[in-house]
Image (cartoon, rainbow, N blue to C red):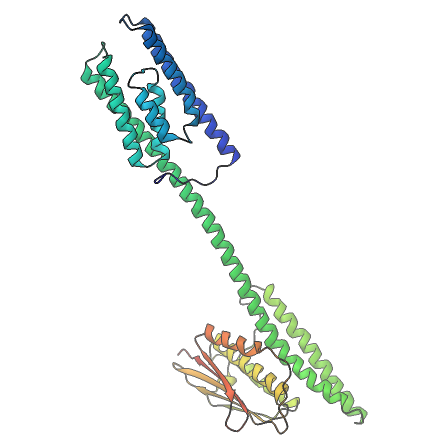
Length: 391
C-alpha cells in the first residue's frame, strides 16, 4: 500500500520480539474485554441472551484476528471498527488495530480507520447508552482515547523510521569508508608503481648500457673490462638501494624518507655522461645550485622529469646529445625541457607501455603543472614540463 512504512529486513531476534509484542497486546486486549464481559453479566439492563453471546463471540474472534495485525492492518482495523458498532467486547481489539494502522500505514489510512471507529462507537452508544455518565462525557472520553492511540502509534512509527534511517546511514557510511579505503590503497599502489618505474627504470637502463659495453668489448684490456665490471657492480648496488628506498615508502612515516630533490639532477647528468650520453645542462633559473630555491614537490617532479627523459634517451636514442634546459622565476612558473638530437642510425623501438610519461603527466597534474612531449623539427624528441613556482 502507498504510504506504508518501508523497514529493512527483520532479523530472527527482531521477529521474535515482534511476536512477543503481538502476544502481549492480545493478552492485554483480552483482559480488558474480560472486564467488559464481567460488567455485562452484572448489568441489570434487559438484553437478549443471543445479543450477549454474539457480542462475546465477536470479541473472541477479534482478539484472535489480532495475530495477523501486521499483515493486514487496514483491513483488520476497518473490520474490527465496524464490529464495535454492535459489540462492546471487541472494542479493545479495535483500538489495538487502530494503533497498528498508525504505526505501519500512512496518516491518511490512519484518519480513515479512526473516523470509522469513532462512528462505530458512537453508533453503539446510541443503541446502548452508558448509564453511569452523561453521553457528552462518554463521547469526549472516546475521542480522547482515539487521539491518544493515534498519537502513540505515530510516535512509534517516527521512532522506527528514525532507526531505519540511522541504519541506512550507518550502512552507507560503511560502504563509503570502504570505497575511500580502496581508493586510497589504489592511489598508494599507483604512487609506488610510479616511484619504482622512475627509480628502477633509470638505474637499470644505466646497468644495461654498461653491461652491453662489457659484452661487446671482450678484446679490451683486462683493466678496462675490470673497470666496466666495477661500474656494473656499482650500478647494481645502487639499484638495490633505490629499491629499498622505494619499499621504504610503505614503512616509513610521511616526511622521513630521503626523497630526491632538484639539486640531484646534477647526479643524474653525471651518471648519464658516464654511460656515454653527452648531456648539456642549462640552468638559467639556478635551481640546481640550492634545494631551497624551489619548493620540494615541484623540485622532486622536475627531478623525475629529467630522470625519465634520460632513461628514454638511453633506450630509444642511445648516444645522442641531450640538452636539459631549466628556466623560470619565483612567483611565476618553472619550466624544464629535455631535448635530444636526432639519432645517427635507425631509432630503436623497444617494447614499452608509456607508463613513464603517463606517470609524469599524473605528477604534473597533482601539482598544477602541465607536461608536453613530441618530436622536434630536426627529428629529435622533446619533453617539456611547466610547473607553478610559488614566490
